[in-house]
Amino acid sequence: MRVLVVYAHPLEESFNAAVLQATLRGLKAAGHEVSLIDLNQDDFDPRLKAEERRNYHDHNLVPADIARYVDLLRTHDAMVYVFPTWCFGVPAILKGFFDRVFRPGVAFHIDGAVVTPLFKHIKKIAGVSTYGRARWMAIGMGDPPKKQITRYAKWFCGKGCKTEYLAHYHMNASTDQSRAKFLAKVEASMAKF
Image 1: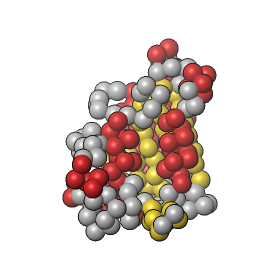
Image 2: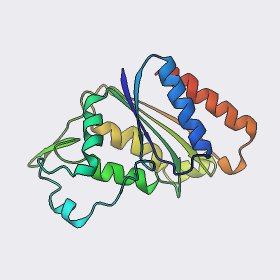
Image 3: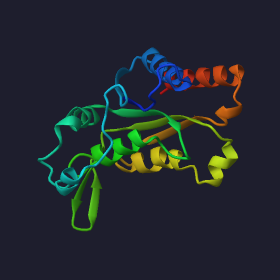
């Protein structure tokens, strides 16, 4: 399977960088062909600017700075998003990726009141995230990052698209043991992806 990994953390020394490496090791061990989008390394601009918004529904005007991402989305069978949860949401750079790249003519087609998903070739989506706060707090807030991946991103795919979500909650109170356990869980899960 061709798997596209989208990574959204700015620090190379972060725990999320270790999570990314565990994700990549697991996917490669399973024999998948893996491509990586590192939004921060790419210096991705998450802002949907005025001119781009004006032309948002023109399928022929995909901005040059997102054309590579569009091509990758169209040629991969699965997606894995690796990101921290900040303020009970995905990082702004990942939100901007959804805003700018999941656009009409790319992720969906609009015909009057009918909206049709266009990523029907994507068979599986996974999210791998860390949260500063405890799980009960994320649940109390509705766990928007989990919904962003398992509902929103999934909507653009075919009806048989499967989802998986792995989270290390309460990073503020994490231990070496809890982090090592999570990394092992991520790698094992991705090896079965």
